[in-house]
Length: 244
Image (cartoon, rainbow, N blue to C red; front, side, top):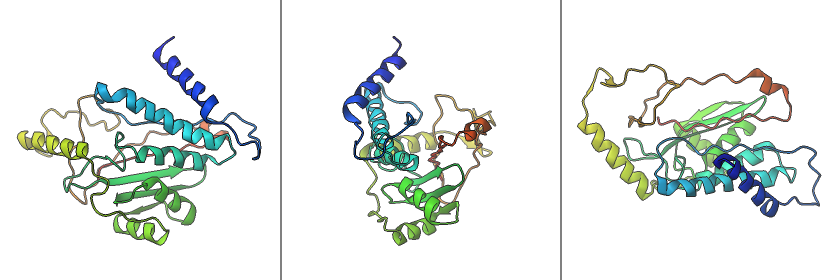
């Protein structure tokens, strides 16, 4: 059995013991599916097993809601909230710092018909919950910066004290990358060895450039196969953290 199949078997074994349906609630007539992505990048070997363990936990937390009749939006929010609370993932607590030593976050949620996104959010514990508010409570698609902060307060989502989401690992990574950037020559708006114009490709040696406040970079979003949207049971959710 390959590592992937072994991993899936472990998840199903845990689901049988941990994610038990509540018999008092309405029966679920489909086998629900939740897909959780924990990010990409160079992950130290000593952290990989723990990260995989936490990804499994996030999936099981969400699956528990689905088998008890909760909505796909509830399940997606639950999974992402779980990851946002874990410093291992590059989102919310423990996220990458910008050039101002701040964690600046984006989050988004998309359903079949609507979408809600927040951008350049600071000091919000769970940006995905704020994005859901945009999705369900407004006619807007995207709210950013101070507008997003005010929107959070207006909808009962507290703003944390500055720096509350920073952890030691984020600070160390920031200092290391800042040192590397200062040591390199940067000419003409690009690194000397940066020859690719394709924003949809990335090799394993790349790193996120420290950006200035107010800067934004275009990203290419791949189109989704239209066949996915024909099934009413499928909820397609995109969750992005871009450094602004």
